[in-house]
Image (tube, rainbow, N blue to C red; front, side):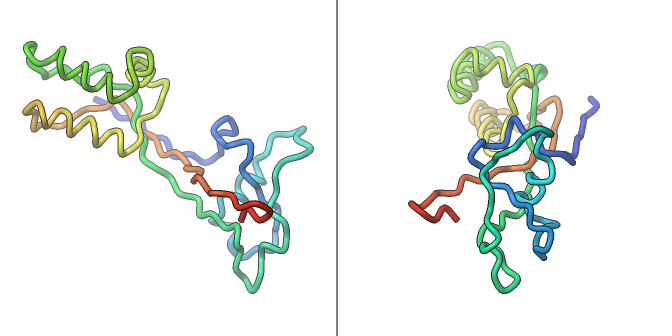
Length: 160
């Protein structure tokens, strides 16, 4: 089985939260690894307003709004997940995976690769297989590295 590996070099703006503050501070010493700066450089043409980090966030060479650009290894598609599953446990195991992934329609979006499985979800599916006695490798169709936008709790009047 060939694994398709993609390393994301651009930000998929559809996955960036609309409230995600971006940065345009070219003088920031942290800009090379900052997800906010990367996002600011990749805003689509024609965008005239977006939440933005203000210049005073940078003080003494450190930025209070800095967010390191990190990727997670996401899996997508699992059409061959049950290839080696014995028929007597197939239905029960599949039902367990379906329930974990949020039901029938959500399950099939993951199954076809329309939705990505996080490392935690991948591990949980592996654990379900282990509960059913399978010790071999659990096979997902493909993987990609996705930039992660961390949830940052906002405080009234001072979000960062």
